[in-house]
Image (cartoon, rainbow, N blue to C red; front, top):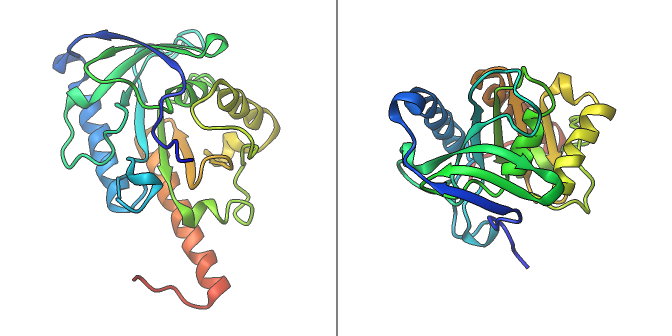
Amino acid sequence: MIDEGAIKFSPRLVDATLSQRSYGDLVARLIAWREILAHTGLVGQEPGLYGGFGYGNVSARVGAPAAPRRRRPFLVSGTQTSGKACMTLHDFCLVEACHVERNEVQARGRVLPSSESLTHGAVYGLGSHIRWVFHSHSPTIWRRARQLNIPTTRPEVAYGTPQMAREVERLYRETQLAEVRILAMAGHEDGIITFGRTAEEAGGTAIAYLAKAYEAQCGDDGDLCRH
C-alpha cells in the first residue's frame, strides 16, 4: 500500500496569508534550491513513481537561533507541491511548533505543511546552528547508503511520524550525522534528508552525495549511462 505524501500528524493550521515583506526573500531562496533539486531529480512528481504523488520538500528556519527546541519556527513547502511547475509564497506555510509527544504540528498559511514537517522540526531541534533542511528522493543514493557510510534510520520507522523524529535524534547522538549532514530513511523508499547552516550546505550535501553515488555505481558496473 502506497502512502507517499500522506500527512500522519495532526495539523493545526491557521488560515492566513504570509507576509511578502517578512518572508519573501527567504522563500525566493527556497524556491531557487527547490528548482535545483528538481532539475537533478531529487524533488518532483512522476506518474510512475510513488503512486504518482509528489516527493521531496524544502524548509528554512526563521527567527532567533536560540528559540526553544520544538518551537523553532520554519518555512516549509506545502504538502503535495513538489510537482508544481511554478511556486510562490502561497505554496509555503510557517510551522510555529512541533509537538512530537502528541503528534501535532502548529502552522499558519494557505496550505497544509509538508508531511515531513515533524522530521524537519526534529532536525532543527538538533542544534541552533541548523537553518536549512531539504528532503529529497534518490534511489541512487538510498541504495548505496551503507556503501557511502550514510547514517540510516531503522527500516521499521515510518516517515513523518513521532518515531521518525526520535530516530533522527538517535542518529545524531550515535553516529557521525553532525559531520556528514545527511541521513537515509530506510523505511521510506529513496528518502534522504540533508541539512546545514546555509542553503548551500544543505543542497550542496545532497548534490555531492549524488555524485559520490554515481561514482560508486560506475565502479560497480564499470559504466554509467543515461537512458
